Image (cartoon, rainbow, N blue to C red; front, side, top):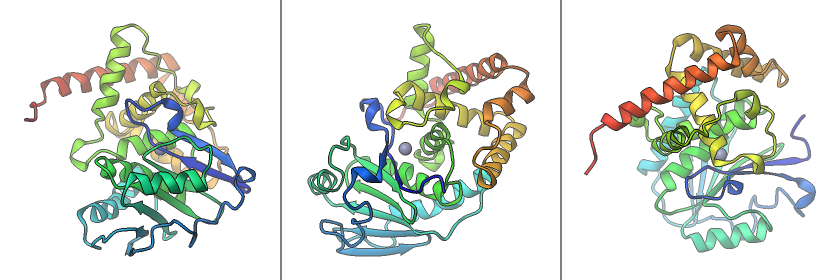
Length: 290
Ligand SMILES: [Zn+2]
């Protein structure tokens, strides 16, 4: 088992956050007891809500029919249907802290030395867990981290770049059609200054979350959006890749598959650039919200 003896800890990318926050891999040897948070001191235990695959633990009153919980339940079907993946019954535990202070105290005690962030996802051999503080961006954070949980329940060997690219895609509200305006603006800025580097083969080997920069998160999202929204054939290619990954974690990488279909890495990159330009033009013409 590739994850034996290791914790995979993933966070989320947000503009303005230091890139090193985004994702981190911790070895179990860095923690005294990696499973100690289950039933452990300091964990939210005032409210327990079972919602499909989710087991929500909160340290404040939380209605089972809360809009945010219903949204996360819907997300399970969205991820499954969009990526043509089965759903799993493996529980994904969400630990919700009512205040950032309580969350920070827990994280500092249980994950000492771990970079500060608003939320993060932890996978062990036996558990999938999300930890988050209840604050202004909680909906976005939980959509991102819970997507990691749904994904890892069925594709535990998913490459880091794709894991994050898909989580960035699904962190947006359903009506956004996966168009991540912050990433789009960031990439447009890179394009304007002549520093936009598109290279999937460079992203694919990334295994240390600390290596992923804001540029990498934005590019990972862009590849996922392009694959899902440019042509049905490319959407199928991504779905087939994920299906193959479920069976064989060392299956042929996506860049090689794309090159086989599209002709060359440069052709893929140019196509993605055009896709981003089209999205940016659409975003520019979108009605300005009051
Ligand atoms: Zn993430």
